[in-house]
Picture 1: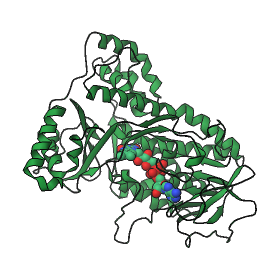
Picture 2: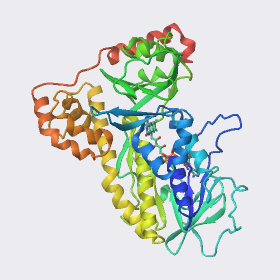
Picture 3: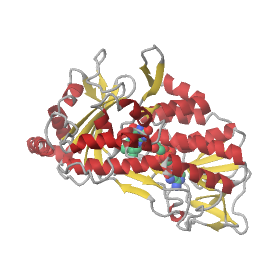
Picture 4: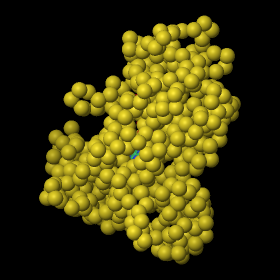
Length: 479
Ligand SMILES: Cc1cc2nc3c(=O)[nH]c(=O)nc-3n(C[C@H](O)[C@H](O)[C@H](O)COP(=O)(O)OP(=O)(O)OC[C@H]3O[C@@H](n4cnc5c(N)ncnc54)[C@H](O)[C@@H]3O)c2cc1C
C-alpha cells in the first residue's frame, strides 16, 4: 500500500518505519525541519520534547521487536536501561533513563535509514509526489481546509467516494491508500473530522522543570526507584527523573490556577523553592549538581481520549487512522505516554498485516482495541488527577466515590499482602481495573481515618511565601 502519515514524532516514525519494513511505500510529512546542522533542535509545537521524560520497558521492547537499530542507537547515545533484580538473580526490564531528545534523535536517525520511508517537510515546494501526481479528478478536501494559511505541514486530508485519498500539503495532494494521523495531541489537520475528546480534557495541573547535571563522580540524591524520586507535599508535588549520563530533571507540579506557584517559572523563585524542599535540596546542592537549562514552564496538561469515530459513531473517515497522542494523552506523572503510543503503533501494524487493504476493517478493529486497552489508562488519569486536585485543595478523600488508583497504591504500601496485586498496574502489563480487587481493603483502611503521609517540607502557603520573598529580593528576575 501507499501510506501517507501526518507527523513524524514517535508515533509517525515508528509506524512509518514498521510499514516500510513490511514493503509498504510510506511518506511522512512533518512540519518541523528537524535538527539544525549544529545539532540544535528547538522542536517548536512539541513542548514536551524539552521536558522531563521517563521511559517504560514497553518502549525498549517495542524498539527491540520492530526497529532494533533504533534501540542500538538509543543505547549508544547514552540511554541507560534499568532492571529489577529478583531474589533468584534474574532481572526484569523496568525502563530506560534518557532525555526525550536522546530517544527521539535515535528513533529519527534510525527510521530515516529504513528503505521505503520518506520524510518530507511540509512546504509546498518540497512536497512532490514521487511520480509527480497531484490533485485527481473528483477530489474533495474533506477537512475543509484548502491550500495555504495553516503554516507548513499537512493542511488536511483529501477524500474520494467517502474514503481518505491522501494528504493536502500546501495545495498539493499526496495520494495514498491509507492515511495515518500521527500529529500528536495538538494536531489540527483533521480536527474537524472528530468530536472533542470523549474522555478527559485539561487536568487542572501544571508544572515547571529544569535539567541538572551531576558533577563528575557525584552520587545521585535520594531515589524511590532507579528512575525517580517523588514527594507529595501539602498542596503540590515534586518529582526528580533520572535521565542518562548523570542528567536529571527536577519538576514541581501545582494546581493550574495558582498564580503564586506559577511564579516558579522564574529561576530565582524555583531555586529558592527547591532549596526549601527536603530531598530536593539534596539533589540540587551545587556541590552535587549544576543546572544545564533554564527553568522550563510546561504547557497545559491534558488527559484526552479520542477514538477513530466521528460524532455519528462511525469511522471519522474510512482509510484514515489516528495513532499515538492523536488518540490518547495522559498527564506525564506516571511516564506512560510514549509506551501508550508505541503499544498502539504495534497494534496498528499487526492489524494492517492482518487486514491488508481493507482499510475499514483496520480502522474499526483498531478503534475497538484502543477502547479496550488504551482508553482505561486515560480514564485512570482523569480520576487520579481529580483526586490530586481535591487533596491539594485541602479536601478529604471522598469515600462515596470509587477510590483513585494512587489512593489504592498508597494503601497497598501499608500491607505487604496487597502488594503483589499492584505489580501489573505499575508495570502497565495489567489494566487499571486490576487494582479494583484491592479496593475493599483500601476503603476499609481509609474508613479508619488513615491517610497517605504528606511529605515533610513547606506547605503550599509556606512555599508561596518563599517564592514571594525570593522575587522581592530579586524583582528584576520576575520582569
Ligand atoms: C509535558 C509532557 C511530559 C511528558 N512526559 C512523558 C514521560 O515522562 N514519559 C512518556 O512516556 N511520555 C511522556 N509524555 C507523553 C509523550 O511525550 C507523548 O505520548 C508522545 O510525544 C506522543 O508521540 P506522538 O508521535 O503521538 O505525538 P508528538 O510527539 O506530539 O508528535 C506529533 C508530530 O506531528 C507533527 N505535526 C503536527 N501537526 C502536523 C501537521 N499538520 N503537519 C505535519 N506535521 C504535523 C508535530 O510537529 C510532531 O512532530 C509527556 C507529554 C507531555 C506533554
